[in-house]
Image (cartoon, rainbow, N blue to C red):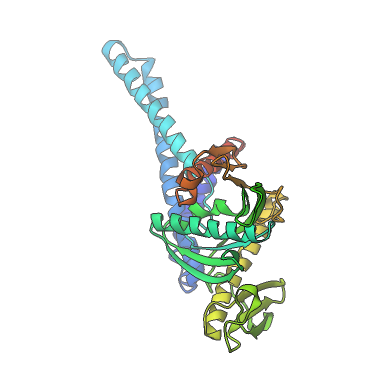
Length: 358
């Protein structure tokens, strides 16, 4: 671990020199990245230096203890106890500082919800999830902008895409990506039988034009008339836009705005975010060898969370958390679930740090 500390301190000193370099100053993106890393390292390095000083002080006190007598010896013992406590506290703080920062922590998020298995009931559940996140966003003071939506025949959403902006949006919402399962009696069920349906949620970090640059030559842009529930036309002009990113095959459609230009701009926002996520997933896959996609297949057997109306229960299967206040959660009181997931992730990251060779 001492070698790791030395490497971090050297990186900090190297960055300190680089930040004054004129070539770096002329590259806004590279400078911002270096400055952010320098800021992260500053507190870590100060913590390392405090730890090393406390350890030196403790070693010095141990040497003096052998020669001390009487009252002086008691004072040294007291100082040693206080210094040892300082070392323990600093080591805990340092371990937490060394937990890798999520590169998306400062980003806004784009969320896509789609009805999956279960027909209209799945679409109604997709609407319920949107309303839950909308209420949660309101309690957090975030802004919400619907980018695109496709309503089903009875008021659900076959799909809805929206942008959330605000403080800690990514760190709070990143755990929501995956298949969500609902167990309840559908409004269309005449016999009162409980059905199982599902909706998928994808959580994307919002990417800006600097982070993800897309060449116009890589795009195929198609325009068409917007449609509503049942496929009927809701516009007399070709205002809806479908953008295909030819190198990856990613397709984004937008139709909520009356202007073709506005729909194209919104589609590009989502496209850049999907490309950023795809690149981040590629890097993570190379590092960990295996990683499942967020949405899975959307099948009933696949799920990250189950919402059981009959039992008034919500269960997050990733951490085995069960809460018997389903209506409370669906009204936007997600904090207990999110906090538990964040604590679980933090505990796993600390365990990984403990495995780091000395």
